[in-house]
Amino acid sequence: MVTPARPNAPSAAAERTDGSPVRIGALAPLTRPGWVEAGQHLLSGLELGVRDVNDSGGVGGRPLELVVRDTAADPQRATAAVDELTRLGVAALAGEYHSVVARAAAERSDALGLPYLCSSAVLDALTEQPTDWVARLSPPQFRGWQVNADFLLCAGHRRIAVAVQPSVYWASGTRILRDHLAPRGGSVVEIDMSALTPADMCDELLRSRTTALLLLVGHPEPAVPIVQAVRRDQRLAGILIGAPAGQPEFTEWAALLGEDGAGVPFLRYLPETLTPLGARVEKVLRERLGSAPSFVAFEGYDTVIVLAELFRSHGTGRPALPAVASWASVAVEGTRGRIQFSRTPGSSVWQWDRPPVQVVDREPAKPDEPARFRILHAG
Image 1 (spheres, rainbow, N blue to C red):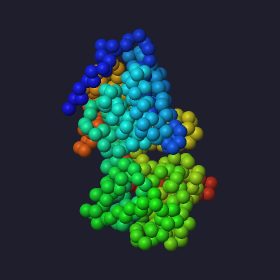
Image 2 (image 1 turned 180 degrees about the vertical axis):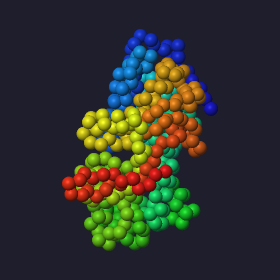
Image 3 (image 1 turned 90 degrees about the vertical axis):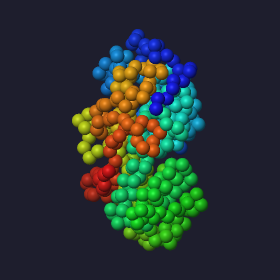
Image 4 (image 1 turned 60 degrees about the horizontal axis):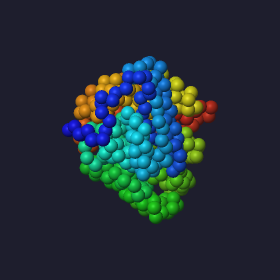
């Protein structure tokens, strides 16, 4: 379907050729309670992508320019930012890490007729109704979390506990796990962390006779205290702790937990081998960040090169974007593979059809050797 142009959208005839910047509105959680380190990685990738596009001539001789707004993990703040960025005349919207925030941004972008490429949020239903204004690079939640469930089954875990807080995102993840595990002989036990301390949770975990615990909670609170409590409880020495939302990807996890944070499987969206572009980008991002770039940084970079290709093919005026052919016509070599978009069953937005998915953990540190990530499963 083609989303009709909004009546107040600027005309495609207003396409500028005066060398002025093509502005992209960028959303990222850069202050608490947002996941700040994820936001910093996302923004670093976006900024490097803009630099590289501009160094190669920009879009039709016009440079790209980011207009950054901090969402602080607040959906209302994101909605207000989309309104402001639309008034400022951005050609498209990019970014965001938190799923509930990305959903608010996507709904507002759809209502305003502003193209939005979501970089890193996975919630399946980004919009209530199908739209051609929104596309996504990260895999939908059901795909990544099903890969994580398959990893658990392959590792011999059939009875899984989830430490969960109230959230649309966590509730969706719990449902995906339960629906995928049940036909395969697995089950999910929910432990409501809004009513328990980490110590109480350990008692509940022991009573539930589960062999794996997944953290479906905020970071660093209460995820870090939960890990510490389980690691220190000798009764739970054999239990696997997992964090499908990706908390252990970032250096803050290792800094707060040390050895306790090793051996916690999580989802990340990287291939076993980066493309030649990805290898070059990885080197530059490592220098910028002072540490290994996360998958979120690569998502940020890929977001910009996709939008640049979209602008080159279809212009920057609205409502020229998006016609139904716009996202579908994108074919670009990204840092993690060739990026093309299609309609995924069950998704309301355009979706990169083959984003890589891995289950990874941090290897326990060895003397005189830095900790490394281990690929445990891929899907």
